[in-house]
Image (cartoon, rainbow, N blue to C red; front, side, top):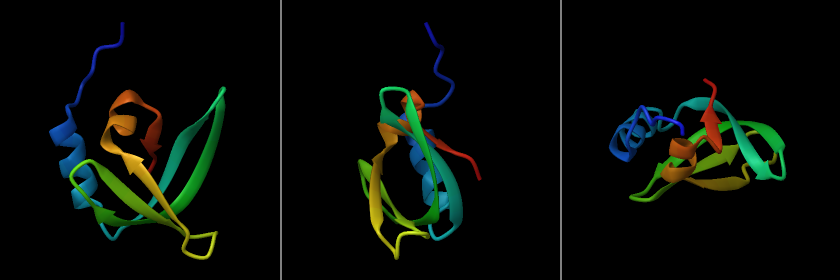
Length: 77
């Protein structure tokens, strides 16, 4: 069993501090497929945050804080 080092409030605070910053993220697409995107954290909401993807003409992708907590989404920079 994996020991969780952070809680949801820590993750929300970290992502809120990165709002407006350029980040690189790696996320799980399912069935052992991972994708890496580069973009800007656009908005921070109570249960999700949005990232404007740089390479796809400003397309917006939504992620939940729980995805970060579980390791399905990793913020690389």
